[in-house]
Amino acid sequence: MTRIVGISGSLRQGSYNTALLRLAAELAPQGTLMEIASIAEIPLYNGDLEASEGIPLAVRILKDKIKTADGVLLATPEYNNSMPGVLKNTIDWLSRPGSDIPEVFGGRPFALIGATIGPGGTLLSQAAWLPVFRVLGVQAYFGTRLAVSGAGKAFDEKGKLLDESLREKVKKFMTDYAEFVIKQRAK
Image 1 (cartoon, one colour):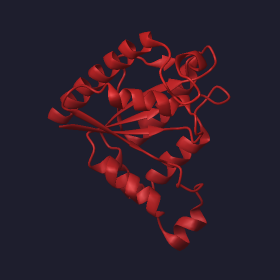
Image 2 (cartoon, rainbow, N blue to C red; image 1 turned 120 degrees about the vertical axis):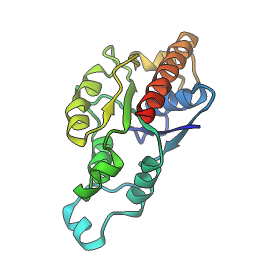
Image 3 (cartoon, rainbow, N blue to C red; image 1 turned 90 degrees about the horizontal axis):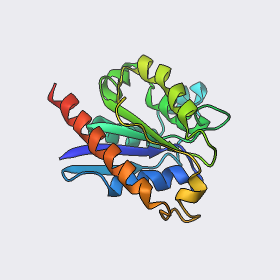
């Protein structure tokens, strides 16, 4: 069984990125299980908090999920032509202490998807993640691209899929990404 952790970079109840992530989990190929993890309880990174109280429980739980997963799929919104702060904050916490980076990130297959109401389909946000991926040493997936523009027409306010043509795109992405994860795991 191939295990993937999915993380939405949006905390909004009606998040299009969370809806896209749920659709990706639903369409994961046979033999692939994707667990969607929440980042809602992760506090803003603060070095003083880390020094006085250590790594917060929500961060430790997410770290453990990632350490036992074969891959990680980030559903990234695009805010002001870049990555969302709450998702970057999560990755910053996950990289603490620095000695944990190889175990949490090192060589692990990471992929990006995203949805936005605008025309750009989160391409700028996805590109902004690349330097972060490089410094953390992940194995970035560069196969099939999944960047949904006009997300308000693809999903309703409750996250129900409206655009059935998106189903095949997500299915292809998940199939291709799962194959990539399996190949990386075999190395």
